[in-house]
Image (cartoon, protein in one colour):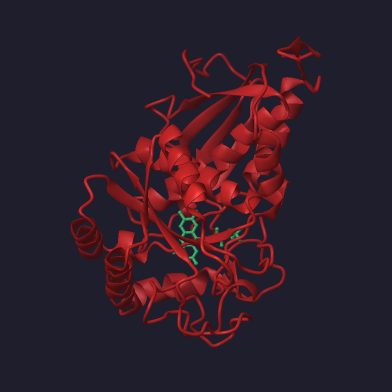
Length: 350
Ligand SMILES: Cc1cc2nc3c(=O)[nH]c(=O)nc-3n(C[C@H](O)[C@H](O)[C@H](O)COP(=O)(O)O)c2cc1C
């Protein structure tokens, strides 16, 4: 399918072919954040569509047996693809889990009509700037206006963002995170997974690099615990002092707990994260309290939530962290000509 330059609402399309736009979307999608930088995805270009596929061989069996965080990670990649197409002046047409016989196919993305998408250029730029910050935050916490804006963004992506700002809410999050962290750190299988997915090998293109984790002792008694990745004392970042009140805790919740909801949660997470980046703030997810079932229940009860907590984010101001690595495009992006076997679902959404 060729796409030629068109004019619509004063916006001129790039004039690139759909195939070129989708290839760029795939290259931008692989920059998405993922649990332990597992990059649990594959991208297949079929000429008129980009398939985003989950890679179950990269699932964390101990930490994430249901594949919830794997699918959330794929949702982050999907958001990158959507933003890339919008920034190029095209509406993305997205079919989520389009084929029940093919559960690894989490989304099919097509190039839709030319349009104008305010803010997409800034978010596209933020894709290259976004990092996970595991340092202590400095400077001012998030302004109230920005928190309200992020809540609206979560809403537009089908999620619910609950800021935990009162001392009671911060204590609830800190207590449940510490409780969950203790349980996970006592689990040999969990520790083995952390060791397998943490690396100081400069040639390795996945996993969490030592350059981006604090020397062991990432936790604090006043705020929730940053996940401990440094089991051998090789972390490059300074061990944080006692946490200050300069971080804002944001709990991203959903109305359900199935694969579709997880995918939408990932899209919401990444739109929030890119928006924070664009506004000059940093963030890092910390998900222990959501992973451990008893802690999850405790968190929901203490915060009085009807929605289901999916991801906790700490956000604030911090020096730019080092960029993490990604597997090369040739390993994760493949091309397959469209076949008549490919279902052509109707009624995709942006
Ligand atoms: C679903 C999800 C859960 C994550 N959970 C944590 C976490 O608990 N602790 C943490 O330090 N980072 C967490 N991260 C951040 C990843 O480790 C990070 O995205 C990855 O290492 C790539 O680094 P980058 O975000 O700087 O590109 C999570 C990311 C995702 C998408």
